[in-house]
Amino acid sequence: SAVISQKPSRDICQRGTSLTIQCQVDSQVTMMFWYRQQPGQSLTLIATANQGSEATYESGFVIDKFPISRPNLTFSTLTVSNMSPEDSSIYLCSVEDPRSEGATDTQYFGPGTRLTVL
Amino acid sequence: QKEVEQNSGPLSVPEGAIASLNCTYSDRVSQSFFWYRQYSGKSPELIMSIYSNGDKEDGRFTAQLNKASQYVSLLIRDSQPSDSATYLCAVTLIQGAQKLVFGQGTRLTINP
Image 1 (cartoon, chains in turn purple, blue):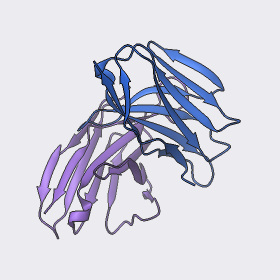
Image 2 (cartoon, rainbow over the protein chains, first blue to last red):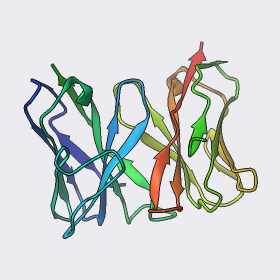
Image 3 (cartoon, chains in turn green, yellow):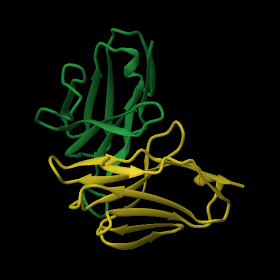
Image 4 (spheres, rainbow over the protein chains, first blue to last red):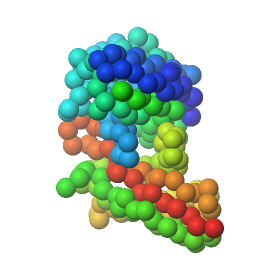
């Protein structure tokens, strides 16, 4: 499966500031996804990022709060803007790996970014 | 009704026994079903995927799918303490925009 890295692995930020999270994949992939996992909760999809088009946001998530870039087929960034303590979560990127066996909608996850907002 | 439902547990199983994890989903036309394992502080790791009715076995893991009952399960045979983790069921929902939706996860503890 694809090898996915994320930076930073963790950060502690002050409210009102912004943090940009990077996701790098070792192969070209069409679909990249950003998820949020709040403490003790499951994963919630924030948005889908395809190269060359605007990201598609899920209900409850807006571009002004979570701007996403997808400049090429191996890289994406998620920015958490104007942060508040409620944004404290783990942020995960995932990809659909076209090399995986079975259906092409199998998703693999990066190691995640643990964000704490004070 | 939640789109994907799991019993949050915790589920405690003695070492060497069979652990049984269950999941139901709401979208009748879903085609792809996944089980992920998540250790505390780590990201989800894919264990099994299943697309057809019946059983699919991989080592100590067996995934079972019953589309008529909208039910998918994961069996772990000869449970080991290293199997202690949260297990997430995920389903690709077709209604509306296709996307992967996760259940709330079942916390499994294997007792030595």
